[in-house]
Image 1 (cartoon, rainbow, N blue to C red):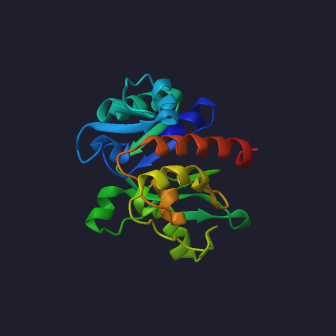
Image 2 (cartoon, rainbow, N blue to C red):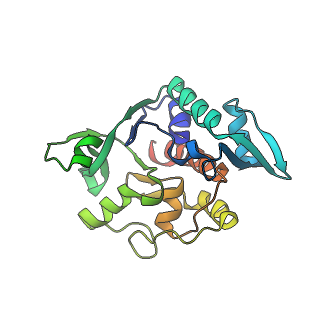
Length: 223
């Protein structure tokens, strides 16, 4: 959503396809279902942009309400111009010109859950962002279904390491990149694809990663 917000603000036609009913991933649950999230100073700048209230926890760290934060980001992302479609899952990717990702193959989540054989629909997109979290599902489709080499040390999904919040937070911005032509990774998917540690209840890195993904797309891909 953070990536979509910054893209939509620049006039890019942006759509989020959400598998579940509630866009926002794990942020709704905060840390261990306590309705609190933690962000570092850099992440607080994004909270401030969304007018989300926060309190200092300790030096360089801030605490915000998880439900307020997620609700505010959803609302402002929509107001910026992003369309959100929930209950939709990605089954495949489209590859057309120059072996580049050029869209997604989609179906209703209920069809997937019921294991029904229903023909999907396809949408074209200049860029696809994999923000599917720990599962990094779009990257796995690209690797496993079409056998493409991702820009990782193994050519595939390396897999996330055990939780080490400090390291994971530091590495997530460098991991936010175009991992295959037309496919950008962000958030926890970026750390999972490139083999960095998972984070805990510190959400600032994921917010900053979304902003970095938007900047990358605007400066290097949509040119």
